[in-house]
Amino acid sequence: MSKVAVIVTDLVEDVEYTSPVEALQQAGQQVVTISFDGKNELTGKHGTKIKVNQGISEVKPEDFDALLIPGGFSPDQLRADEKFVDFVKAFLLADKPTFAICHGPQLFIQTGLVKDRVMTAFKTVKPDLYYAGARVKDQPVVIDDQLITSRTPDDLPDFNKAIVTALK
Image 1: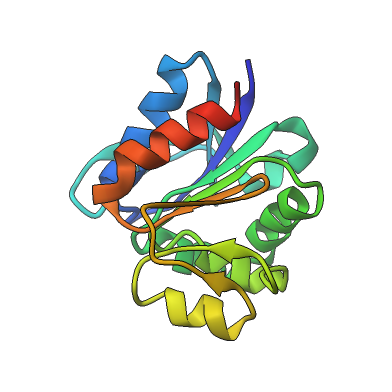
Image 2 (image 1 turned 45 degrees about the horizontal axis):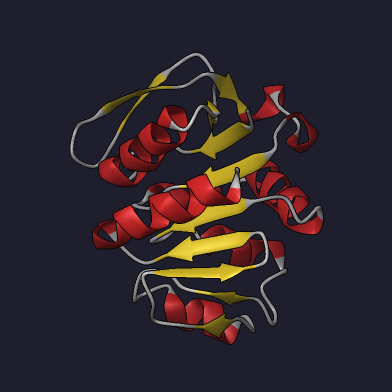
C-alpha cells in the first residue's frame, strides 16, 4: 500500500478530487488530504464537503509515496504558498509518482522544474507550461516517467487508471 498526499483547498473541482481519491482508495492506497490547516473542512466549487486530514505545516514529503494535485481554483491558491511549492518540488526532485489534473500543473510552474518535462493540463494552463519550458501535449493522459498529468474531468477514467497503475 502506498501513502498518497492530496493537496487541496476551497474551490477545488469537486470531481477531480473525489474521483481519483475514490479510485486510489479502491485500489488499496492510503490517501491523506492536506490543506493550509489540518483542522478544517473544505468546500469544492460545486459544494462537496472535503475533510482535511492534516495541514501543510504538519507533513513532510518523505512521509508519502505519491502526490495528487486536483484542479479547479485550488492549485492557484496553493501555488502562492511557498510551503506547498516546496512540497511539490520535493516530489519532483525525488522522482516520486506525482499526479495532476486540469489546473493542478500550475504548481509545477512555481517549482521551476517543468523545463523539458512532457505534460498536459487544462487549455488555459497549457501556454503557461509551454512558456515555462515544458513539452505540452493535448492528450487525455500524459506520462513522463513518474509524472502523470491530465486535462479535464472528461479524462478522469483514463487519469484514474494511469495513477492506480503507477502505484502497483
